[in-house]
Length: 197
Image 1 (cartoon, rainbow, N blue to C red):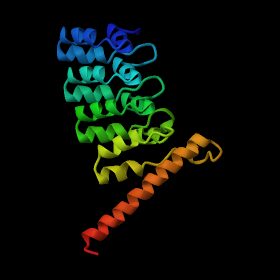
Image 2 (image 1 turned 60 degrees about the vertical axis):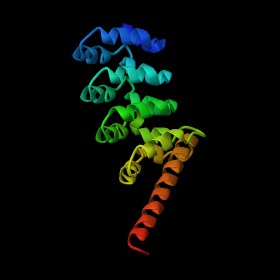
Image 3 (image 1 turned 30 degrees about the vertical axis):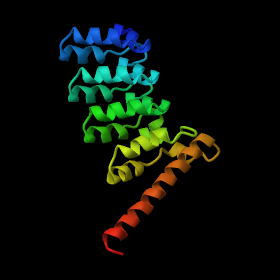
Image 4 (image 1 turned 90 degrees about the horizontal axis):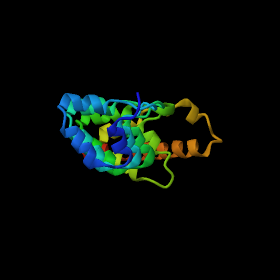
């Protein structure tokens, strides 16, 4: 199917047009039209996440209920990217916060664990961003210590671990290993403090 008026509005950051369209239909119809994909299997939400338009993301997510939001946020485009994976790819931390605030914590953790293009999670994708710690920090601040450890324990895809000559792969592996080491140290210190050592 081709692009809709909502796809057009997302591409051009025309939030006022988006609101007129969404306000003119029922909530069920909103979810249906927000779920329509273009020829690249992208929803309007995918496009707004790519463009870095936090306000249009907020408009779309606020016009549907929580279950519909979660359903929309799980949709993947032709390369397997969810809206959150796209957001991580481009480092749009303001949109990450909008998405986090629109779902339950359980749904958030589930969205973070989806392995999209090349089998990488949101955190693993964020580890590829050169000189940008903000996406990783945003994820870390959105989860508990236990949830953080769970995210860090997701194995990196084999092709990444077995590519010592690929600088971007190696940089991502090193960042994840540094985060794992820091989390282990913090866990040990907390255990010692709790036992009164």
